[in-house]
Length: 404
Image (tube, rainbow, N blue to C red):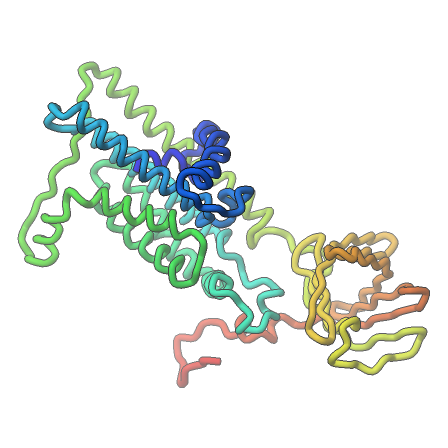
């Protein structure tokens, strides 16, 4: 378990992340070699841990950790077979697990409370056919829709802070178990690629609660009065050592939380709901297209004629064609010249240099030259309140279920 924590820091130990990333310099070469030559499992060896924590690299790394742990356990048991107990070693292992679990859940809880992990449904999501969403995309849209649900989930996860204090460890472990089981089931049943980490967090909660299972069973199932045993803790012969140890603990906790909060506030302003909307943010539906001054009749099977332009993120736009195919473009606005440069992100590198004219709040005209022909496209901005997902709101009284 300690080896898993060291090799999967996941940002839990903020001030040690640089040191804990050093093993990757070796593992990124060793794990592919181990996979290819020892277990004879071939995969794309250029892929490491990324947005997915369930890559082939991660699975092989988990197997390697398991083999090293079993081997180490056998060797240690043989060499130190005369020792009757490992109270001190067990205590420090529990401390490591508690801190890793607590800071991991505090991080995940905080980004839910400020609604950074699950953003509001994007304009692309609102336009995407329901059946075309992936299971993970469906989960992210569902969770991102409700700010209140995000805060609720976040508070439960942030309550893992109780794991950091000896008197509240059991309560903190119970709440952490509820939070991690919820996350794990979402990851399994919606195919979210964080199954390894979420499963490990559940195991860690159970590991912390394991010494209390019997008494908890008697209390909750048999209704017998029980008193939990106090956790073992090391003794300090000198008071200054005691004060130094606990001072360092609370200093680290305080510094980590302050650093986390400040960094998340900055990220919220850059990426989250507090981030400014890009210029011309919105969904623009094509009303008419003119070539050489003549209005063209719309053709639903046309693979070149534009149907919509969606600007969701700064520097990017998506163009939907009449046949519902889509193309992505980078955008550069020159607000002095009233000029828009669209550069395709596809291999064809299509480029448009167009003049834009905003008329009121919901009218846009793009015009310019395309293959020596003058082109003018008139758009109308869609009112986002037309989406039921946005305009439904909350109702205490509902005469009938509003299930659409």
